Length: 640
Ligand code: WTA
Image (cartoon, rainbow, N blue to C red; front, side):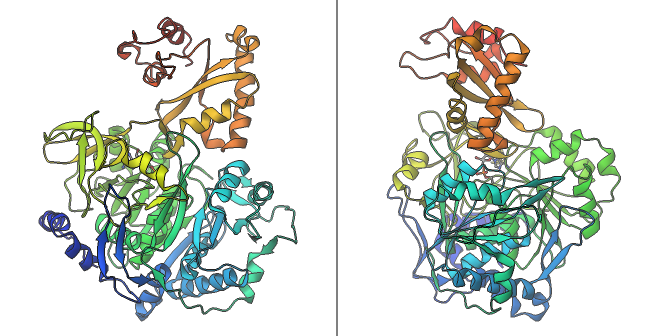
């Protein structure tokens, strides 16, 4: 791989990646196996939105993750995946590259034997076990498009996603193991599938051994199919721009969006960023704690490490069971060198008490990473001192489901670090800051909305089935620019600090939640007439969910009674769990008589955010409100 190895070469290569973009990406892409080389490195722009990379090329993702490596006998016998089960007393499982290759081939044949063909969509709703990782690689091998739905989403959220992408098959577990809980994945799937006419088969993997309903018309046991299947399966020849996967994420408005990523650009960009950001050596062991249900689990648990021939750890459980030292115990036990997690996990483990981390040596660690939300300085320092023992650089990696790969990040051991700072852009990425009017802010020291000026290989190509929504969401706020939805500060040295979302997306424990989705769920309650949801600062989760509710008189009149609020809160939680999943439950609710509205009837969320955040001295101009008198009521009734 063409790796950057010092600051000077970063600067040179970064410049080259922008000035001689085609040459740069041609060099990077030459490291991969192609059935046929591309004809054109890149085409399309942010006006026509017909973005293509490595057009005319033919390749296959699983071939580049597996077949390419097992040609080398040493790599063939190296561990590709170390699986750490939920229960610490259960044996870990290791898969060498050769073994992973065989499993993926088997799974590919299972897909084919069960009617899956190139271009079909396969949905995964599973716990974090090797079957999930093997399954998605198998999809890429046969040219099927995977769509992984996080195992914490509800039946309704699952069926909505399946129907949107018209998945033909769903692959699930009997139950998922998370700490002491069994998540009834198959039951939830059964409920979802009732609403999904496109699904003709459900593959069920045995894991929790909980009671399930087996529906012989649809269901097939995965393990039985695996045993029957052959261990050889040639990879499909895929166009560079063939769809690779769909992944749903929340936006400011409407239902979740299915971001579509395509094959070659994603592959090249993800592999290259993994290599440069983490700077791994041959025998290092890498652990990303993300679930494969999110983009981090796609790009940097699965594809990034495997494309680089690295050893990737997959953990099934939760950080706090059997106790809050679980992560550190695993690090010591398997000698993890590179550890990548979310700030919310760091804050939760910090709050659990320093004794949990000090019990463990952690002397194998070389590099730490964070992703998913801004990391506050205190958490950064704690991570640096208590986990990294001040020896390990922290790579604060900024990127998004839409970007596919890391965009702004330090390179481990190379980039000078500032706490809470994502630092500099990676090759091919050209960030700028714009003001409210979309004018570029030229000063080096500045704060503004973060945009990207030109296409990069791993960017999502569209919203599945709705290209117009893709244009509207990302390219219409500032025509000709990709708008990230994030705000950022830039420093004298050109480094960036990401300050968080500037739109109506709430980042709860690193999970993106759209306010509109939560409002839709809350409005389902028969006694809730209108709701407005905003984020507010939360010590552990980063942001919490605060809901303002206009309710039936019976509730309003009793709003000062704790039993009224508790009962309503419980009922609302149940609705949210049913419509979305437990991650979207409101942390705080406040019953109000009205919401602050502009003269055109729009809710003024800025005011709601300030009140929820207890920043009432910064309310700004409220005189343009239709009902300015409501502000005082909202402040007085704030929920603590
Ligand atoms: C936020 C996760 C600050 C940001 C990979 C972005 C971050 C959203 C960072 C994307 C970071 C991600 N510093 N904020 N290092 N990384 N974010 O799609 O608001 O789940 O827009 O992708 O997370 O979340 P997503």
